[in-house]
Length: 47
Image (cartoon, rainbow, N blue to C red; front, top):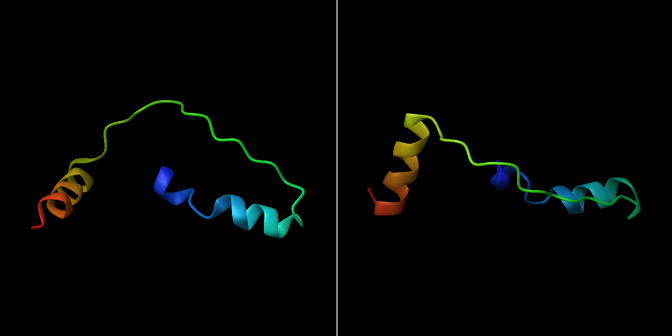
């Protein structure tokens, strides 16, 4: 998921002394499991 990619570029560049290059390309959407969807909805509605 996209949320897991935050900080990746900085870490990659740090480990490669700034020589690494990274590109992210959208592939597709996918439905999340029901339990994850309920958790997201609960956070969004303040429950």
